[in-house]
Length: 453
Image (cartoon, rainbow, N blue to C red; front, top):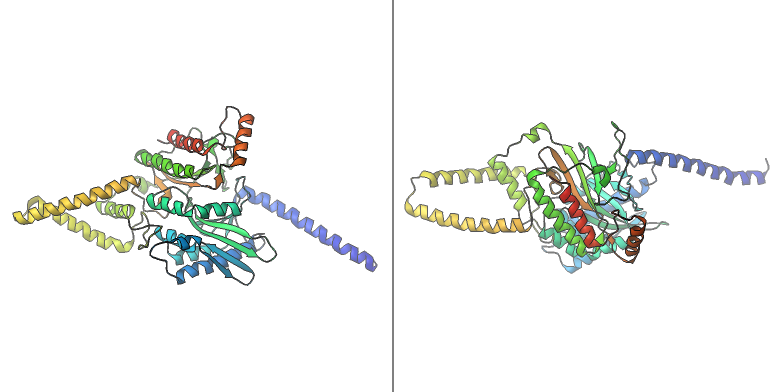
């Protein structure tokens, strides 16, 4: 073989090698699509990207750790952009203090958040049946979702960040997805990527038996279930849920009201096509028969009603619905004190002056409790469970449900209006996702009304 033939065979072999790799990669992706969730190892196309994400997020959170949050958020915090230059890439963090404040109000420490995002374990990729071209990643502990977003979507979130935070402050038990960070990564010779970090609604997912993405309509709302007995993760849709109900009993009125509140907020943003995520798992026998002691009830109530945990004001971090061990002694002491007071007021040995003073104190306390109760009702709070993800977990009589509202970036603009007209012609007498925000809001609320007991 002469030199010319060698020179010609080199590119040919190279093209053949690339073709084989593409076929192998395509085959692997088809297998992974069946699995739904898999580890991003060194052979994966996103391995390098996710490693850089980890490194950049570690530095971004460290910056928050090293710079204490302000007592109260200001306009500059919402507009802040911090750029950190690493060896092979550049990471930009948007509105860092705002998201750090929200994380704190949810009871997360920055070290805990940093450790989850930057652990040695590989990220997981979730193959979604969503029509969007976004890439979905999960931290190794499955606690946080990372999702690539378009520049337009990121701008939309940042421009509405203040009213989003105000909504979460007004309704601390909101079902809206909790956005925990917005970033942009620029790698040399590659297009920059925007991505957001969110709290996973389905956390922890160890015992979840079914997952649904619900929009309250019919067209394109069926997904083939996983084969019986398989470990494949499939997110089902509205038509898969037909004939079933969310069995909540006493919690039902709370859910109906909160869905109304959250969808009304999304209507003010002029958005549609958001989803109600739903998953469920059976309660264990000990969870079915659990009885709340008075002390436990007090502890859970304190956590659920706590008014100092605010996304926009400084406060000692509290985990909603979770009882910290260090609180147990204090609360038990409070309970004992209350019991002693009841015993004294019941019988006595106390003189009239003491009794009169106690009555005044009780009356004052009742006034304060009444005001707290009114605020509790106005904010549509509920008694949260002692669980790792209490804001998105609701226990019914026999099932534990994970519920949250996600994908809130689709604005009802000119393109969506045209799509609405086209779908009306193509799908007469059928319901589809592309409708006006008021209609979308009403329909999803009606779906929850019709599918809960």
